[in-house]
Structure formats: structure tokens, C-alpha cells
Length: 226
Image 1 (spheres, rainbow, N blue to C red):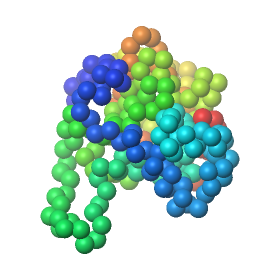
Image 2: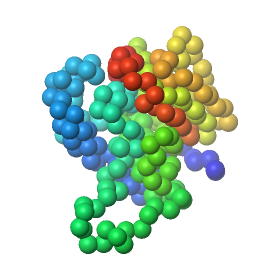
Image 3: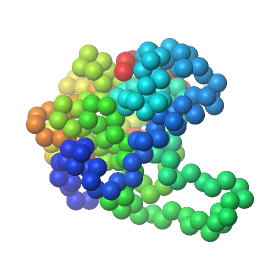
Image 4: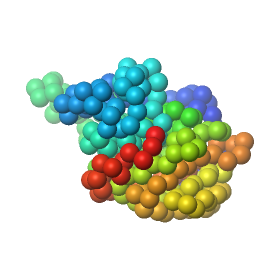
């Protein structure tokens, strides 16, 4: 795969990517209601304020990576569930249901679905259709971007694999800090507390894979900090 040149979030908007961010709050709210959780109940489980959950659900603010993972884990959502807006199956009986073609194996670079999170983080899905086993993403951390606050760490089930395309990314895993540049790769158990952040004055761009994120069912694993 050819290396993408670093781009700001605004520049990436011009590529015509399918933007899954717009309906993210509504999808999270619907999942919370299906789980019969009140707004305050979810906020208490995740460890944030009810006001923040409300703002996220109404699309007024975007969550950080850590907060989104924590909410998704509490609601039993895969990351692919957050990209599903444009690919909802038609209701039974809809005209054209039988004619709807199955997704092919190829995901074109200019039509990837994207979620833009707080702190300048962008996820673009690299699979043409949802995959419940693997999260396969093109990830960009803009200058100053981070997965969570500097004094925080996140953790969740599964194992993470990443390959750096451009820029420089800091990775803290437990008590150890690592600096990744172009061509470097890393893999680690995502249940170990970790944090990601951009180093330097260029966006950090990587290919990211999370395998079996829901392998850890212990809720406490998902609430280190956001």
C-alpha cells in the first residue's frame, strides 16, 4: 500500500470520504436506549459526566478515542458498528431489497468511511464491509493529537498491531514509552494500559489493526480513564 502524505483533518474532508461522524451520537444514543441504560447510568459506568454523554449523543462534541472505546465497550459495540450509517440493511419488504448488491472485497481510497474524534484523531475503515472479528483502520493523529489526556491511560480487550506510514507517534504501554517513525511497527496486548500521541510538527499516519477487542469482558478493564 502506498504511503499517504500527511494531511490535516480539513484537507482530508476534501477527499470525499464517507463521513460516519455525523450520525455517531445518534447511534450511541440508540445503543444506550437498547441497553436500557439511563444517560446518568452510562456516564457513571464510563466515568465521565452526564453532560458530556448528552453532548456526544446530540453531536455537539466528539469523544476522545478513550471515551469512545469506553462507551462502545459498555454498550457492547464493535468499532464497525460506529461506521454503519450508510450501510444499514433495508427493512423487510422494501422494494429493491433483493436487488441490493453485496459489497465487494475492494475498498477504494477515496470512499473510505471516516470518524473524526476529539484531539485531531481520524479513523478511516479499510474494509469494504463490516468485520466483526478485526478492526482494520487507517489512523491519523493530527499535530497535538492524542488518544487521551496526558495523565491518563486506556485499555480494552484484544491485541493491537500498527505500522507507521509517516510522522512520529508516541506510544506509552504500561510504564514504557516508545517513539515510532515511518516504517516502524508495534504490537501489544490492549489490556495493558496505554496512550498514543503525536510527536513533532507533522501528523502521525499509521495502519492499525485491533484483533478480538471484546475478548476481555471485565468492565473494569475499560474504565481506566478517558
